[in-house]
Image (cartoon, rainbow, N blue to C red; front, side, top):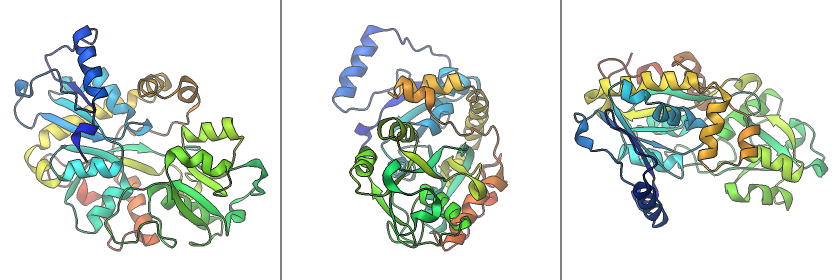
Length: 353
């Protein structure tokens, strides 16, 4: 991943960003148009080394509290600076983390736990980021499909989001084992409804092609999150067949914030300050207006931002809850080595709690 593809947003204590400055706006537009990294407007020397954290994220609903914390100056109150780098995929954000181009990365648990289980990475879990709620992930079909229940998906083809690379414990896009957070949650619900692994065929489809694939009958159904749920329903009249985050997967943790063990051992205080600021922001993000404001700033349409199903932003890390997803991964065969979430959680000394 080239950092030229990323965009930066910086907040440093003791410095006011002049957002109305015409020069800054014009410079940002020129650099963004040329695909260049937009530098922060504050010097990294404003704070001691390790107190300025670079956070790699994929913009979207999951990372809303991070942007709320930036907007409200919550990191500055904790005495740290934060630069947010946007990446097109969780795999790219993870790559930036492990190669030292970011200090913290946000992404789905399956990507990070897969790397941990395979021994490819030594990571620390900073905090839980985003948990499921009813309606946040669904299988949808066309009204004419004749598919009205999960059991009727047997023998059918379901388009799924393209997943980031896992650590080769399973083949990419396996027909037997889940290969993403979406297929893991969905297969868990399907099994609770009596549908065995492999009886439904999952195939990866690029996000921009999801609606077309469904409309042109290239797939029988699609597995999507918002805003694609809204777009499929409003544009195609698509109907829900299965809620992937219900029953056995209700309130399932979906994504979290990680750092490398090496960085955490040296900069535990800064990471704990980051956790504290984010906890406040995640509580504030329970207000729908805050979420909608951020989503509109990320170029989501006003209609989608108004209708979007929003999950839960936990204000604290519940180890037992996050362990659920590690256990689902192991039980499903997605990973072959168990992951202990408790051993990953950052403590005051930079180690585990």
